[in-house]
Structure formats: C-alpha cells, structure tokens
Length: 444
Image (cartoon, rainbow, N blue to C red):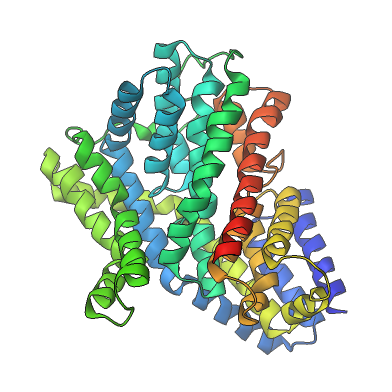
C-alpha cells in the first residue's frame, strides 16, 4: 500500500509539472499533502510534518544559498571570472584549450549557481571560439561540463548541500569526495567527449546574448582584479571547507582545538560569510569600488534564488511527510531483498525522476526523501550516497529541462544537435559519477 501511494504521488507530481505546467513548489506541496493524507496521517499532523520539513531544510541552507548567491554575483560583476578565463586560455594555448576551459568552468562554477555561472561564462566561450577559430561546441562543452559537475556534486550548490542535510552527511567530506568523483567525470565529458565536435562547426551568434538580462556578466565594478587575487577569492570557500575536512580527518584528532577551530571556520555558513566579506574587499574596495556600492548590489544577487529556495523547501516538506508517515522505511525494507547497492538504488531513483520531471533539484530532493532510511540503517556511506543521488539527478537532460533549452538557444542549435551534445554530455557526467561512487565505496 505505501509503495502504491508513493507511486501515485510521484505520478501526480509529474502530471502537475509536465502536463499542467504547475510551479514545482506548488506541485511538491500539493503532493506532500496528498501522500500524507493517503498514508493515514491526520490533517494537522501532515501540516506539522511539512512545517518541520521546511524549517529543518532551510534552517542553515538559507545562509548558504544567500551567501553563495552574493559571492557569485561579486565574482561576476567585478570581472574576476573573465580575468581567470583569459589568463588560463592564454597559458594553456590552443592545444590544451579544453583543459583551460575546464579549469575556468570549475573555478567559476564552485561559488556560483548554475544559471548565473552559465551566463557568466558564455561571453568567454564565444570570444574564445572566435579568436581560436575552433568549433563552438568543442570550446564550450568542457566548460559547461565543469559547471554541471559542480552543480550536481559539490557544496555549496543547492541540491548537494540540501541532500547533505537530509542524510546527515559531513559537508567537508562530501566536498572532498565530490572533487575526487568530479575529476574523471569532467575529463570524460569535457575533454574526451568534446573531441566528437572537434571538426563540427556551428554558427556563433552575432550577439553574445539574445535575451534580456543576460548581459549581467559585464564588469560593473571600477576595475578588474589581478588573476591570483581573482582565483584565491573565488576558491576561498572551497579552500576553507577542504582544509577543515583534511585536517580533522587525517592530521589531528577531531576533538583537537585546532580541528575544532577549523571546523568552525570551514563550516559552509562561516566559510561563505568570510568569502563574501573577503570578495567585497579584494574584488570591490581594493579595486576602487566603494563598499557602499558593493553592498547596494547584494540584494540583486539574492533575488533570483527565491524560487530555488521555495522548491528546496517544498522538497523538504515532501521528504518529511515520507519519513513521518513511515513510507520511506517501508520502501527501503521492501528493497532490502534486492541485491542492489544502495548507491545504485539512489542513482536509479534520481535518474528516473530527472528523466520524467526535468528538474535536477526536484529529482534529487525527491529521491533523497525516499532513500533516507538507508543512512539510518548504517549500511551505506552517507557522503557517497549524496554524490550518487546528485549524479543520478543529472542523467539524460532533455526537452522537459530548462537547462536543455538554455543550452540550445544560446548555442544556436537544433533540438537534435542539443540532444547529441548537451544530453549526452550530462549523461556521461552522471554515469561516470556513479562509477566513481561505486569505486570509492570499495575503499571507504
């Protein structure tokens, strides 16, 4: 019975989003209420469960998402992103251009939300393709694949950060393992797969951007920072979180005062807060832009993530209803007889939801709510489960995904061309990510 209720609930979720084009947050809320009532929970109990799920999910994520958006905005508007790209492209040369694009995408993608990062790197991709006289897809896919990997695997991006909270995983360990898994995924999708388009020229758009608001990647601050300062600032949150994880795991005991201090500094909230303050100075004040001007622009960076936060809140509500109603436990108990790795199970659920729903974030959050009891059973590494779920949520992006159309329109491609490039690239990232998780699971 619980399995049937959840299947009907997910079918309704798909129908509401795909057929009736209902907003994902509203759809998640309605389905959460319906599943809770169908599972025998009282109306008041359902509402309390949803409130608990929203509060528990957004408790610390509000800080992380907010500070992350601010940092990404400062990096974009200060011209730091273009400085990083120009230097790396020049240093690597045409022969190793894909590696330069990957590094740029990774550095820019870590602190920025996917759509913001996508718009920031577009002029870099187009200008590089023009100057190098190389095919647009050959130049662009390595950078876009790096953005996809950071979006799906690495905190402080919304989906992986939220799933870390769901599973009770360690944020720093997830980041470190995520980087390990990300490397082969980026190489496979960004370097090896991009060679398919080495001689396939597609028209470069006459104008860098064709839609309103896309020109926000232009420099708005007084002057551009130096390369070293730009890289250091962009990677500050990663450095702080990785340092805390490495020291606490391999150098000193977790209870050591140094480990405790680094744990505080390397917590995503404090790491991002410090990074925003540092970026305000290094990319703003130090370059001649008054602090007041930098602060006045911060609200504009946060506004675009309002709906992302609501969708995450809706996912948290749905997750809590699944947990409180006992549905998740029932599903996992039923699947215990199957000879399937928990990591593969999480990947398959997320992949199925991604293919049918389109949204990677919704797919990841919904799948996470269903496999949550696996963590409590202690039979799986929580950090690898985060990565496997994130990898599954990237699978086979196609016509029901906004990212598909974003890539299609800006790269001036047909639907078939987009399926052959974008969709295949996302699927390669997803499958290699899963393989990486399964390999690491042997040794951890």
